[in-house]
Length: 433
Image (cartoon, rainbow, N blue to C red):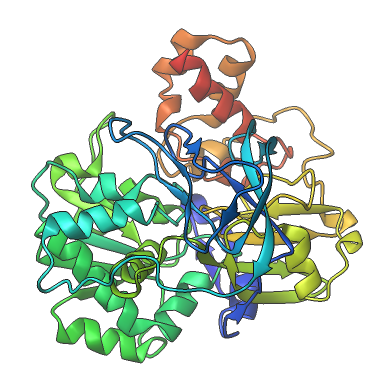
């Protein structure tokens, strides 16, 4: 079985990815009740643009803000239907109670929402405005509004498309490369025109022959394919840049400041749909997996409850003790299966009772140093944990907790079964307050 090889010779098995990767994508129909959060992006929440009792059309704006609000992304209806409630519900990604709109689905029809654009004749401003209107965010999990990243005032010399898909429980990006290669190329070309960049790299973990059509058309259009070594952590934006280009983004700064923009390949496809098909971001690819049932690659509308997906797959949720949304290392455990798919959802993973609590038998730290060895950004998780317990902000700053990329490797390798990640997250919050 293949594995990712990390620092200190630690390995992460790729059994899940291998078992699901070659399964074609299945389209999940919308649920009877769709639930759409008004904040599915990094930034400020949008405000509801509809009221209870309103009829809504597929692609209609549900949440938006005034133009002077900078960091946000519009939210659209995934179905034709009727607004039956505007309430609040805990969002597992933010761990906060946030506004959510519930829609009674009338039908599963889709249709063109915006006028289709010809990228060869459309201006950069028109293309960028389309990305904004479509509500596109980074679909690798970060959910930063894509129009802001593409609209950087910095001069960009390199565009990197992250198709590495590091998480061991996801393969939906790979399926895009296999099933939608021409669309992926067109999306890359739109991004390149907006950024006025010519040096484009697609970073992938695939080997030659796995995505032959995509490889051929990328080469034909002068786009380099860089095949990455098998490693989990270098999927992170700054580490990816260092691995490919040898540039280190200074602490406290961002890639565009040194002339580099990185976008996930799923985001690329969303840009294609917005420009060429006139569609807002209302659906995305995810991977479902459990040891009991195996896995599937799915195309799901945003707002679809997890429970509905289980029903579609003919899986009883009672067989799982715990369900995780997103990365198997970083994703939150769900308190309810009524939680809907969001723009940033990459995966759903179900765990049986014997697998659901890997950190239940924690013992005191034995000072083995494994967490420090495996850390891809060379910080000290154990020392940060102690500083967080004492709420020692001065020490947390000296230990550079803000550099943490939330990869979860420190928790994964700990022989004492210490879950470091919550302490690192809390530490980052402490230095901001």
